[in-house]
Length: 259
Image (cartoon, rainbow, N blue to C red; front, side, top):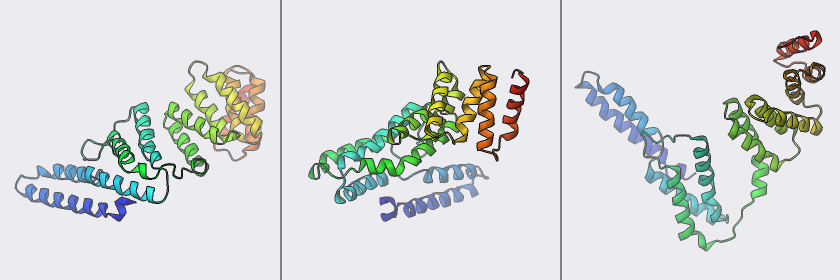
């Protein structure tokens, strides 16, 4: 919000425009050599807000938060969580061309603000439970995106976090089962089966749980159980996009054939 109130985007745009104009002048005298450099320079100028702008945003945002009555001690936790996630997933931050501060710097900024200014308003509002309830769906949706991207560890961690908020949710248990099934390491398959069974016990009408456990049964050679689970999946989801694919498995189960 502080970026908007302090017109940081406009300042960034003006700075980017000035840099582009400067490089355009150079291009005229260097036979086009600066053209790609101009594009690169423009990209570098708009990859993020500057360190100064981010520091200002941190200060002003912190003041607004404290003024609104929220617990200042909670402020650094956002960047702590982001820093931990980046380190766990070994993500390289987008800091190659910009002066955007690293997460560790933002964390240090907020810790300093808490130390120097946060002492005035201890024990402020946290609303942690309300926040988690309001954002729980985002956690699950993000877990599904991580899963589709092959980031199984991050996806599993997010689903487990979601289940701490909403412990009886068939879709979440099903997703956890699918993560384990597709990763397939160590005891993953048995864990996947347990998660699918839990999902079915929570909501027997959620289709994907039956598909997941049916595919496991098929892999394990339990064709009768596989056929029953996969047929139930199709009956609960008659318009399933993978209907033909699952139908092939059912046919193999009837024939007693192998994969």
